[in-house]
Figure (cartoon, rainbow, N blue to C red):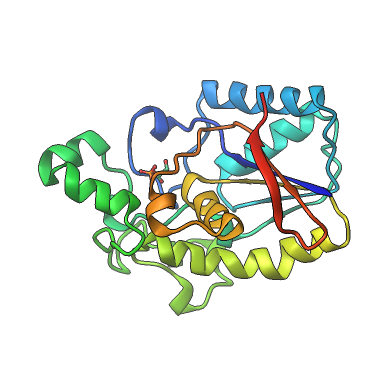
Length: 229
Ligand SMILES: O=C(O)[C@@H](CO)OP(=O)(O)O
């Protein structure tokens, strides 16, 4: 039996301000840093150790991983970063306040943008400062991989190659894995691991910095999962 730990980053400044974040590289709030430390303490209390960590290329998940590993005195383990674990790219909604957008477009539309797997938020254009093609960290992406908007199903499509090609092989070598990522990239992984229907995953809300443990059998099929407390 293997254990896999998933953790959404701690609260960011834009979580606190209720703004769509996506690929904007927003830092953890003071509370978010503390949440990440508390998550690390919890994992320590339950005797968890890890061989390898995976994060997105966004500082809120990188710092969450760092604070968790600091509490475990395991800052030395390898941590691999990938854009494929980034938050869903929220297009032209990035930076906007969720309440203001709801007042303008109505709850139904905003709910679709947030949780309907096939609904695209309004797209940006390549001259928008939010276009990832302007940033060094996305230099390795092909033009087709650089998003202008992304629905949840596309988030899953770009996250899964990293799961299959990097994370699963690590687990097959019996490495103990922790993944620090984002509400929607984790939702995509959970949908895949748990084989959830679209309607089920749209109900799923993953809280910040709460370790979610999967127990997996030798074939890496789920035995059970639970939040650590
Ligand atoms: O703004 C975002 O990037 C995400 C996560 O905070 O929001 P939502 O939960 O609405 O998908």
